[in-house]
Image (cartoon, rainbow, N blue to C red):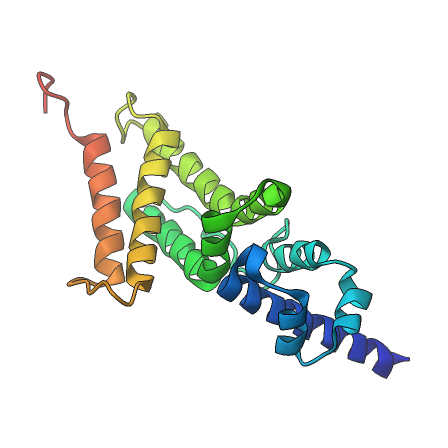
Length: 208
């Protein structure tokens, strides 16, 4: 029995890995159960026995990669320190890693999500975007409460601006047609510094 259970688990794992690759390569609509079965080196009957439908398989792929709470292979969020810039850099690196590791599926979700896949889209974005944004907002709120940031900028807005710059950087670096003259670490440091300088600079007419 243990060997049989191991075989079933192995087949399921191969199907999930194959489905993630095929969904990313062919899109949610273009991916077929036949192509996924071939990628996993099993027959379609085996796929249907495990997941019943293509949508059931997609739900399992999303749950495997983006389940809440996060699956074990996702690193925990960095703990806050007394250094705001260092904390934003650490959270930014964490966000970059999540995006880079899951970029093919994230691109697929963004590029062609349909109404009947909306729950899966929400789960993906909940797993990747929300925890990082929540941590950024919490850290920025603490800095604002301590007087380190101007009050007219909402922490939620600052987190979105910083997150947007990081997301754009990951997308641009993933393009084979775009040659950048700076590194990922330089881009992240600039994004953090621009956010902090904008949120701490004195407004026109106010004392510096």
